[in-house]
Image 1: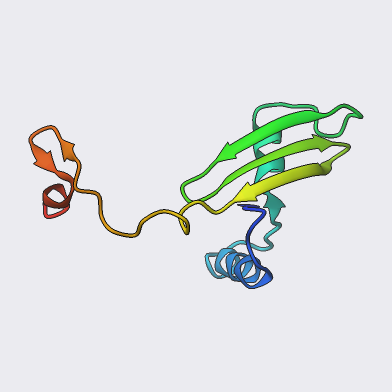
Image 2: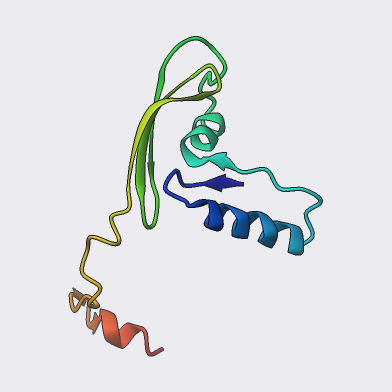
Length: 102
């Protein structure tokens, strides 16, 4: 399973336990940028640098991957820095809040 670089050890343990409770025999966690690089076929084990950007639902990450690991990277949890107030933008004829009532 992939896990964001910003995940704490408690969050990683919870993910691992959830996978085991769901029926997995074992659960291995890998950093999200490495999983993304493997998914698109980048040479993660080669001695070359591959740049990867992961834009997730609550965090964005950028990393340079080489020799199977992250050489350097940066992650930002942007949900915590945005407003928690619901958006009132108009989406066609329905507002965001009215579309949630359906």
